[in-house]
Length: 285
Image 1 (cartoon, rainbow, N blue to C red):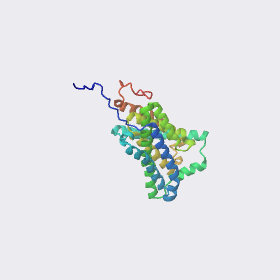
Image 2: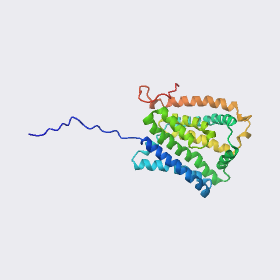
Image 3: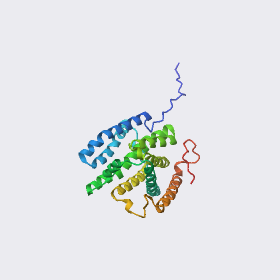
Image 4: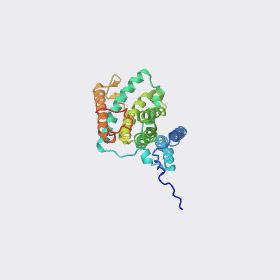
């Protein structure tokens, strides 16, 4: 007499987690912000304006080591997926037009809530370069490293995780709000929040941080340029303290067209018959 074991019931294979738990993500980001607050000042004192470059590079370390330690795919979590050339070109256009629109928003808000002169001078001084070495380190830190690291952390590590648990709308909103707050500049929080919301939506749409990196880089590059070249002396751009309508109106129209075109080019990533996702950001092109 043999014992026949019931093998009809099989243990289902558990689906491997592609993103860390929310609590772990917030803890890692908290550690990252704490470290940045503690080391930014000493780094600046020790190596001058190169401190910003090293501080930005250091931001990615806690998240990277966490993902490696717990065997997550850091490329997937950071959303380092490739994009097509036309999407990259479109991202550059969106970055350019968004910077112009954001410039006017900043000017309008500055009338209502002026940025303290001391803070404005401190920000400007940190971006001004006086020699080729400072041009390289500030340019690398502000344009290249900051754009990549901040997007990997907030649009990849944070937003991607929240999308898997809370849906797209809450994920984009939460990540954008945190991104705006960690800049510790209440006078710019609205501008940063608006920029971050658009970056979050486009990152979700492309399932890649690369468009956001390009847009962020263009925005920072133009900000760096404006800090070193007085754009108020360019009469065709600035009129009576505001962005000239000849620049602002085309920028608004091209920005709207660019975002719609972006959605069109990423339709294959969001098939219409897939009703499992959050479609609250749907834009009819």
